[in-house]
Image (cartoon, rainbow, N blue to C red; front, side, top):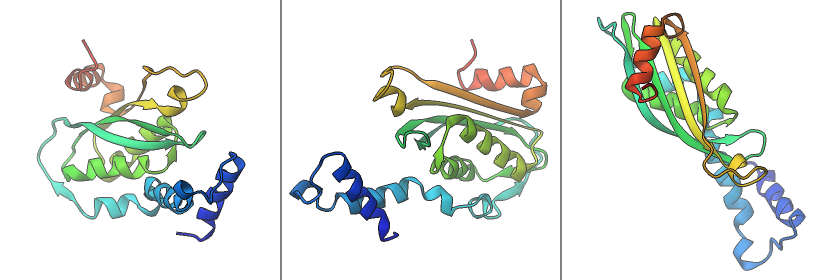
Length: 186
């Protein structure tokens, strides 16, 4: 942890009108700095490190879906959390990705300062790049604390984003099968 990070949190507390020397806040700058580094640990990871060779030969050419992958990220505009789940699918072309690697890729990109639209795109492009799949689909649904705690303060709002690549973009049937399987189509 850089030495200046806790100092900056201390200054923020002072600017808010708090006394950073009161008992309850004595270690808060250090804890807040440590928490922020953990929440943003995706910057220290790469797609190559996450995949780590877990790409396996397979004759399967049917859709692979990993649904309901929980994610926690931070809005780059307000530094407030957004929390939700990702649904990821791909159509293999001779190689399948280790199951946990999909969730780890979601987590790596989510653990950076983000906007949901870019997060969805980054996940889809990484899986496409690694697997060379015939198509990749990613849907993310999340609740944003910047929408719920401040400004418009809409407690029940949910943002949904999707990225469809390859067969999922080109074929309405493939896209609808994916959406139906994740419960997004009637």
